[in-house]
Length: 431
Image (cartoon, rainbow, N blue to C red; front, side, top):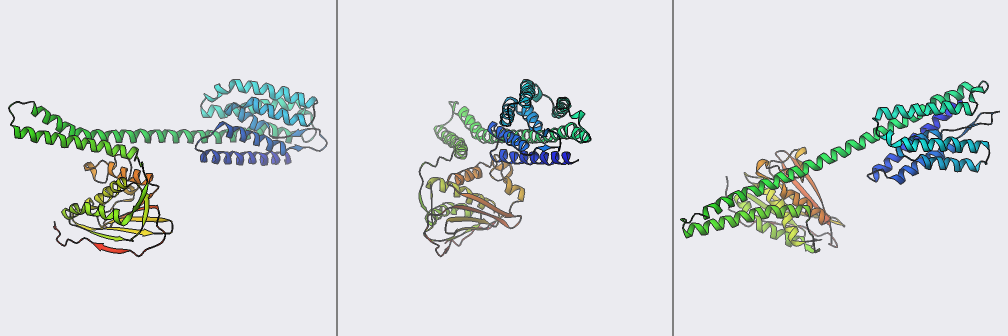
């Protein structure tokens, strides 16, 4: 059984090579033709390197038929693999064996090249059985041309290696390829369905948000068509129509900001100054929600970004944090530094989120506010942070609150001691 063991060892090397080929394809996101050619050529080289010759018999045995048949049927590379086999065989001498190789593999290459398109249209199970059957058939025919049936006591072992090991090898490799193809198709269908779902959710969000102000605007336009309305009502209705149209425009602009943040110019931003402006802007909303804002900034910290987009990002983030505390609480805005990065922490003491909610943050039309939100605001936040080469990390616990950590590349030369400030107003409207 020495020959069979040798063949199974060679077969295991081919399977390992196929495994690394799959990893290569996974890394490059798709399986390209040059990768298939490379794997096929290396497989044939392995088969030529690991040959076996029985003592006293002028015959050399190898597994070249396995990669040849698999590559010919699944990849349509029969002519290429046949040419490579003929080239290698030619180095061993132009003799009777060489011309038999040309006739045998040349004929099979043309046959497999013609039937490969038909083969690929079959079901996975049919392809596996066909590949195994073809391998057994041609191994059986080759055993006659090589005179294996007339060998001495070793003929049984050789026949087993030819008629059993090679078809098993083709069957195993074909099965692995079919599983890989099925996995790729399943992944493609999943990605396609996710894209369609995202488009559907985005379309529903935008249409829902735009329809409401447009419906109101249309209603007031119809009222304006009534000649009996007073001048005062006429002015009031026009003001409402303008307000509703601006609301629709805002939704469209948020969508555009998400799809393309348009960071046209990058400039140094002094974090303390920019964040204090955002905090000052949100103080009225914080008072209405009985929220106290605590700021802990390290002076001198700088990042590179777009000032307007930076403000939009953190207005959205802090506004969400304030709205997450309808019964009041503490909003902490803090900065931290490392030699290469600056982090901005937005902490609230609200109701918190589950792990699933945290994972889905930033998805189209997903909002923790239920029917009151569209998720466009947090989507814009994620999009702007990516455009400014930053990252977002979210930690949350039900009943304990949520912490958003925004990390950006730093322009600051060193660490500075943080300075704590607090909102000056003491009067809070308690619910």
